[in-house]
View 1 (spheres, rainbow, N blue to C red):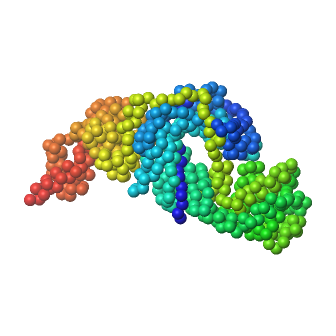
View 2 (cartoon, one colour):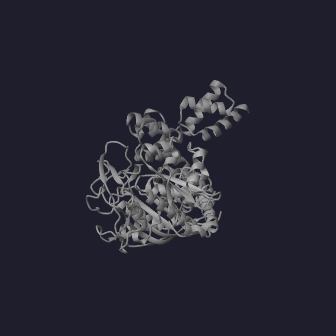
View 3 (cartoon, rainbow, N blue to C red):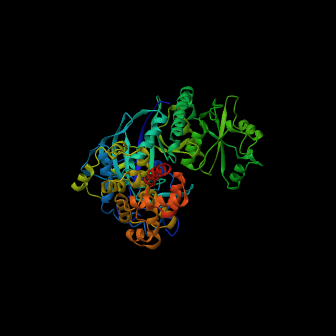
Length: 607
């Protein structure tokens, strides 16, 4: 399906925290202190409170922060001003900006982006633009990069309910690079490919790996629709399904708007009725809990809207969910509507009695909501507000991706009022040595690396995913060995030893092993045996080779051993001869050399 979209990639940098010297690592959920706060919205640079900040601020939730002694400090809990910007984080941002051929800003001005959902202890996120006007090449398409920013990550949410939200502070302050693209005209399949390719590109730099270390937001619209920001993609492989569902949702909302927008003025005059008495003796657990907790139950007649709330607007999502999700975010509870009844153990008889109580005609439908006492009017107004906005146009808003590949309302779209200048940090000039180092990354891409290294896609993917690319390039330059050999020894064998013995072989030892392979002192298959010996005994590479008798046989020695096997065991098949040879002298020879030599000797023997 044809769409217009733009990406915002948020990639965690593998360095210390951005404005303190704490470790940037995710902890186990134990051994923490707790701090309780209330976060309130503040005025932006324009003198106004941002609409998204005001929306969150209305919830007045209590925020609980769980603080770890070894990864959090006074900066993280907003009891101390930010320290100096982390140099390694800035360097990574500059390197990535150069690779995207962006125009680098030599002076950084940090801003505060108002965030009052509690995910930032300060009530804002510090962010600064590093570069602008870059580009990312995907196949033959040039994708415009509008801005590249460096910013601090938010806290890690543990739980949330109507009264409070609980966060861990281990993630707060971890440096992020945010890359925002321009508008891309594409479809859902190509959008997923672009996202996957960009994810691979970021791994060429000093960034973190694993779940949650790269987050991708998609701004999306279709013809006749409005920009919607999709957040929370957990599985990039499902991105095409999420995008298609959102595009269909907008497409169907446009159709609904065209059919029903004439009644928006009438909705403003709708009233609610108390319908709690209808449910006396109800078998529904939903109703029983409402009665037990002394909740109000209000009903609203939807004049002439029979069937609307039950209309599917995309896979697994009905129009009524748009109203219910909005109400849940604003007030903490949703709606039940007549198009889905009987359900929730609410009977057909109860449905009919509600319709009678609300004076519903044949073309009417109804909804009801279980709300807190004293919130009946607020509930009514929020429901009307959402219905009117849906029937007037596709609402421009931020939506959260769900496990079933649909999305739900999260908050209004933020605007310029979110931003104001960070007064605790000076203007930061990027050092010349960081700029000089970064200039070496100009034009770096997956394709350019593959071409310059003369390496296959498979090998490059292995090196990128194992975080061994820089090391492998260094070893290739140092030893001249093929990447196939380097990957086997420095990646696969090294990983095997770490998993089996819980020990990491020193890089210097790996380099020495590869140099001995290059010098024909040992064969490639001996590398793992040498590493096992080092892991078990702690001895040097040289001593381990000597102790395990792994020194490579000369051609003369190898020929002599093959001759003995042919004469002693009368072997005339090359395959069985090689197997017996390995049993006799171990991994001290190259199988290809022995195979060629044995083939010639067996032929000579037969002649």
